[in-house]
Length: 159
Image 1 (cartoon, rainbow, N blue to C red):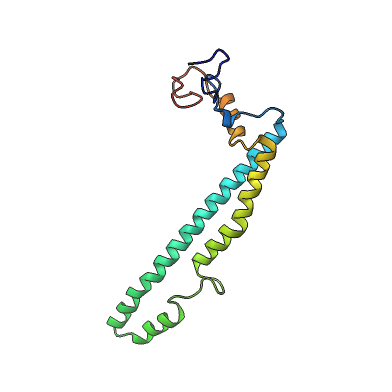
Image 2 (image 1 turned 60 degrees about the vertical axis):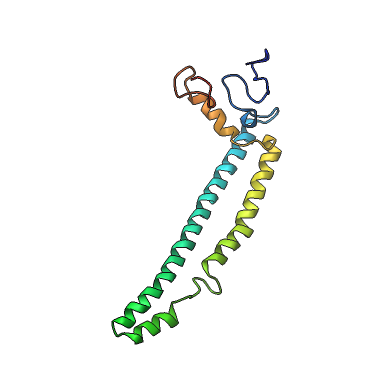
C-alpha cells in the first residue's frame, strides 16, 4: 500500500525500487558512491581473506592433532626413533615465530581487519550517510527488467 508518493506506508522504499538504506542520499555524487562502493568491495575481499585465515587455522590444528595418531602408528611400527623426532620437532610447533595459528587470526582481526572495517564505515558515513550497497542497488536498477519474473527490486515486489 502506498501513501500517494510512491513510498510504502513505512517510507522505507519507493514502489518498485530499492529500500531506503540502499538509495543514494541527497547530495552524494557519482564519484562518492563509486568510492564508497569500491571500499565496501575491498572490505568484502578482506572478509574472504579472513575466512581463509580461519580455514588455515582449522586445517593446521587438524593436522597437528592427527600427529597424535601418527606417533602411535610409528611406535606400533617399531620406529620409536621417528616418533620421538616427530614429537620433538613438529608436535605443537609454532607456525610462525612465537605464534600458533589462533594468534595469527587474532592479530589480523585486532589489527589490519579492525582498521579496515572502521575506515570503510567512516567512508560510508561521510560519503553515503552510512548507507550500504548504494552502488550495487543502482546497478541492479539499471540492469533488471521491470515487470519480468525474477527481476523485482526487493522480495515480494510481485515481479
